[in-house]
Image 1 (tube, helix red, strand yellow):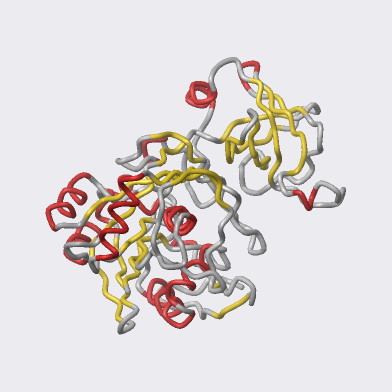
Image 2 (image 1 turned 180 degrees about the vertical axis):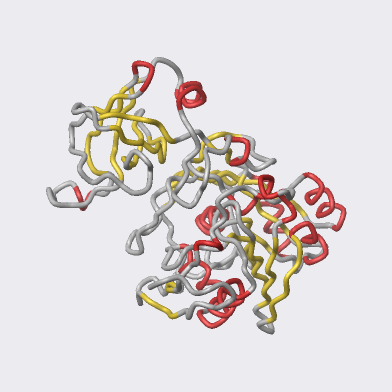
Length: 368
């Protein structure tokens, strides 16, 4: 379908009964191709749509006004994972140039990697098990097998993610600093520096793509939140590559929820505070360590949890998130929190009001 004219709203329908996702046309003018700093604004001057499930109200504020929206006793749980320069140029033995996206560092010195076309516009499905791709600076990537077990016995499977080993002349993050670039998709208009892909509170590099819901949390906003009485609870979830296919659940990701964070969240929940997750990655980590009563426990490991209406949230009360693409699997998570009608109404509002999508765009705060 063609994009609607400026000022019109694309109809939204519910599709895919398994994912309960949203289907709508996203006009290209609403795809943020550059960070707000390149649009003449600060990080915390993006727009914030605040929706409340209690009365289905929607209001629009500047993100820097977030402290006025939250209340003392609330907890803002943040993902402090830093972003790698995880996109590398590679070539096949026949000279064809491609991009290699490092998704997730696995045990036994292996990686989950995605092979993409040279412009990174889409997956490259012609790679083969046993293939060796040439990396710059004397490095190489050996593709061993499809990441998904169900693809390993199917020679006709369209394989997007591979298990690979890397042979590099130095430690991986040093190598990526020299030869890598941030992962970018077609709507991003330039090769922006890695600093634009880092949250100001990032402490430990490990994410293939930026946990972007926290991008607008600048030091001044965080200072005002703390002064308001909002507690900040850090955790780690190292993100893999985005799952852009409607039939693909998110991949396994490494998480770590420390003891102080569990203590803060449990204490706030017991005293009537709201637990607000900054991003879907935080939801995934917290819900992985939550019991059926909504109490969380410190821990670390790998999570394959998929939040959906069939497995709703147990501990998270609210969510700060970006605006997600049509049919994106993350929308199933949002619907698990809001229900279909509230989610549909907020996305119609965002389209009508000209909100910007993707990691450099505007934000949506869902409150109880």
